[in-house]
Image 1: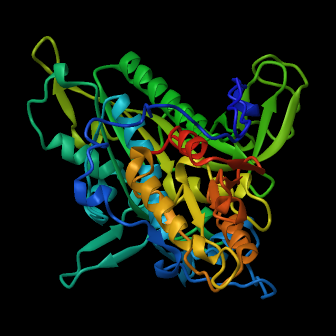
Image 2: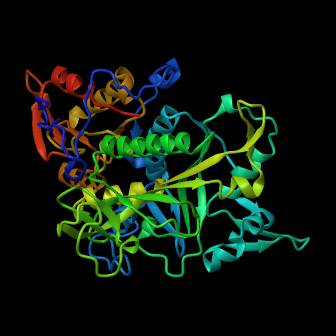
Image 3: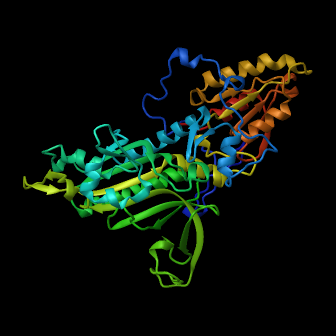
Length: 478
């Protein structure tokens, strides 16, 4: 069915042919108990004002884009979402932080849905566990290494297999009844990239969700592996992103089974082979050089494309648990080594990759859940014939943000009334607010109507206040 106002298709599609859409419902299924309980003070808070937002424009139209060779990097800098700090490192400005926090809430929901428990491990990791696992030397120059004043070696954690396995091993007497145990975190990770590029797509410091599973045996571990992979698929579906899961190399993390999750994109640095006959998909690094036939069905239907890696899963077996003696007490009351898996999601990379694949060259198009603000209200220009409607625009913005529980904290008022409506509409399009409400001449008529620009569909509607409220009350937020 199609939503009557914005015409977004809700038809199911295959994983490789998903299209961006807005998710509209009367009651958001993402609303966890307690999330809708907003204090009276918070519900009556005035909407954010564009004139007060710390959202500096780092690159105005006509300026040289320099080495910004990808769309997402340019748009995020132009829109005041990021500011460069040093090669491969960025300041996340308030708009970007809002989007990252929304994405993390979605990730939390999916990870808790498969039994994940959230923790937070140190970014500063002692070298000794890495040396025990054999990866201190294996990681090479991409690992940031340092020494403290006592001469002890440390690293800035690029991943935490050693740390979490050592943590579990320190808890003696863990029962098989407590497994599977899935521990995850969302933290900054560090990688000394030789040539950082593409903004958040390849940086030295980035946000990552890493989960580690501990199971009683191989079958249970593979069941956990499959359930987390399915959760990743649900996450990308919720974001309206076209994605593909491919067979992958285990690399320096190790294990016997690995898959990557990619968003197909020309700018992607990974080469993928996908079979049009049976659906087999793999990173070319896992296939024999020059192979043209599908290893599963042996047809010649392999098609090469490029992808941006946004997730990676590994079945580790006992690679780490045997080294650190991470055991549990089995049903026979004997210690047994746990079977492990690890599961990564590039949180900041998902944000940038989504902008990369959904946006135009001059305007951000967000997955609707991730837009920093859902609604932008534009009052008329100061001194214009409809200038007296400014107070109406302010009242409308306040009532939408306080009266609709799904829009609390999601409405911004573009109070830069010294600028024309056209200029502010152009800024709103560049920043990608899903809904822009213009309080223009029609709002002064006997039966007032508001101009509503639905950015993701490109439609412009004229709605009464009641119809506007009805439409926006069904916008799903997180």
